[in-house]
Length: 205
Image 1 (cartoon, rainbow, N blue to C red):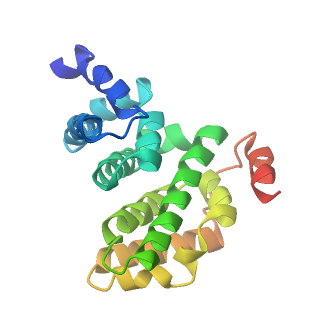
Image 2 (image 1 turned 135 degrees about the vertical axis):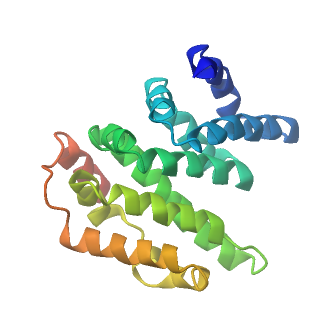
Image 3 (image 1 turned 135 degrees about the horizontal axis):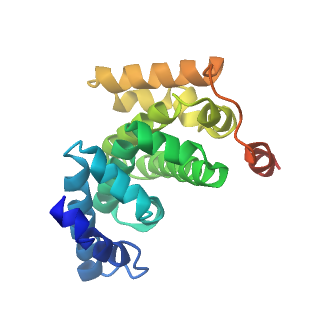
């Protein structure tokens, strides 16, 4: 907590969103993500509260879209840990634009991983795909997120195409099955978030 109270993690954020993908700066991005990743591993609610208060989600989404594979993996791990926390899930799902930003990046990731795997049989996208499934599964516990997932959940997760990556991972297979069930039936207990209908309309155009 002394580390957080000194606001030291904030100094890592600019390195995470650099648009230059040279090897030295990518290593710096990965090292910065590693610091945040180590913090979320502690399961301390104070860590999640600090990261949300200092707007960690946009830098992580940037890394998930633009970083190299290791950076993407650590960034999505951070987002997954935040989603698994009640405060983090509420933070993401109570703002329509924030929710859809997260859902869209996750969808783009699983689709791009599938395309890259098809293009190169030597590449194994399993690790990233598993993190994406766990993130979607966590989001599906919220009714507002389910409304978004009913429209934007990638077909590759619904048609069984990813199951080849989950043969030896029973836990993630169960997450996927529960995710698909939640999205199909919806989650009772939450009203649609104001602004979500408009945002969803944009997605369907």
